[in-house]
Image (cartoon, rainbow, N blue to C red; front, side, top):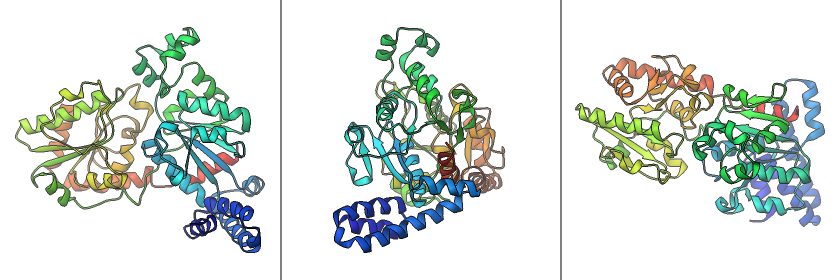
Amino acid sequence: MTILQKANKALQKERLGTAMQGYKEALERYPELHQLVDFNYQLARKKAFANSIQFLHTKNQAQLLATRFPLRILFVLPGPFNSNNGYHVQLFARMLERCGVQCIVAVPDRWHTGEANGTRSYSSVQADDKLMLDLIHAWTPREIVRALCDSLDKRHRCPIVVHLEDNEEYLTEVMTGRSCAELRISPLEEVDKLVPENCYHPVRGRLFLDKACGLTMIIETLRSFIKPAQPHLVLAPPVDEQLFFPRPLNTELRKAMGIADSSVAFAYTGNVHRGNKDEVEELYKAVALLNERGHAAVLLRTGADTEGLGTEYWDKRYEKHLGWVDRRRVPEILAAANILVQPGQSGWFNDLRIPCKLPEYFAMGRPIILPKTNIGLLARHGEEAYVLEKADAVHIVSAVMDIMDDNTLKDHLSEGSVGFYQRIFGRHKSASLLDFYLNL
């Protein structure tokens, strides 16, 4: 397929940023088709501009867009394109492209699988002298992201926005076994060796956040990481509503997995690492406890377990582990569950994050059990979710019994979970994000 054909296809699918970039390349490659290509380019540009105007609230903002259009934005991921934060970036980029913004996603070299999916490797972005950028959005302040952004900043001198999605200090302490307070007063050379590239550096990372032109954050409580005067935007995790929506019970998958109609099935779609190991173990304990009490229960799992965590010693008699699955299969697996559970409790880690699974859980229209932290503080107990002070094994079992013994409650929670999703997550955030960019 030629560049022109790809641009025409992008235009048809309303991927206007991609279409405009393709037409610009076609203008250089096919000068004899200048009149036709330029017509299509201007058409894409007008559509994108019209879309963007709909998202803006004042005349001044519209004029600002006209002076800086089209925007060229680089998202910098800390890991694979097909990961939790990678899926978020994909959705935001897709929304922004509909407004004519040109988006590039940079992925670390070892996770880069080719540019067919629209990504670039770190090294190719660094080596591209012709690359023009208007803004860089660093997806987390972790070392691997910070190092690339600092390198690019020397050449492009464009605004850098940093996205926060976790209590990064907590994760660094878990990974290094040292407190961030101790690391900040240690010799810098020593700290450089101790902090892995997939973690936040208490010194270099802090400087990176302080000089950022703006910050986005997954939850309001992460404001503790920013300076009072810094521009910021609360950017809740987006959900692919083409995949995650209320579905009937997936009896076909249950039958294929040998799950009896009378069994209560749970689903946990995510990796296990040092940060969440103890919480996920509580879910395993809850399933075992239900079975010991004569209530057949099964846990459907996807994702991987980090080596060396001791998860091999968990009671896995009632586990159906599917390993890594294609993204499109995840909602099918969730649909096989009767109840969806997020284990955990309020604390220094959970209070400053939103587990990526939770918005997807609510979108599926299942009864949700979750602890009274992060979005558990927003959900109305008994109406939108079953909210526990502490979602450990004993309390999860009690909640499950309440729900399964009361069909009215079960149906009420199913309906309420969808309403909660629409209230908190259902509105796309591309408008506020574009607005945020333009006002930096």
